[in-house]
Length: 161
Image 1: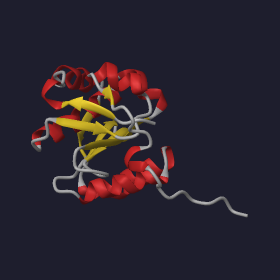
Image 2: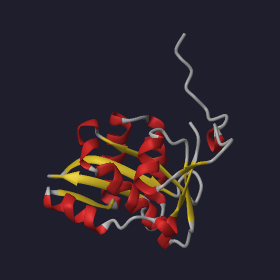
Image 3: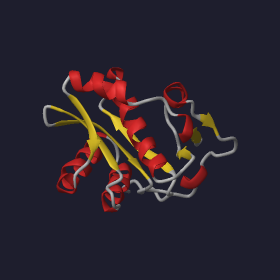
Image 4: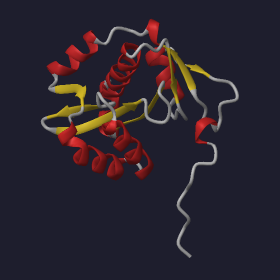
């Protein structure tokens, strides 16, 4: 999977989307330190251990670099930034049943806005899966020759004999 580049100075406004989600009882916010175990366990169960490891690093940042989407005290999705590299976004994940409710876009915008607030003009979405989603949501552009990028040579668990 290739990396994508996003112009942070040209992001769409997030407020209308966040208000719309709030009317449906969905809240998008920075995670709290006391939620670390809950969030990282959930990420491991719903996605991968690798993403859970990256999420743990996001909790070690000040301010915390993990954003969560919740509904009635249940996690719907998460997004991290500044984990693999300072200007990188990811991982980001949303439960399948909530992917058509714009939860992913809200998480994406919240994390990108956090990177912009840190002074970055551009962000990189590392190893982007659903490229079309990122292109449509924030005008992300493919970075030529970026596969496998920063994840080149990453360790994988070996299958048991």
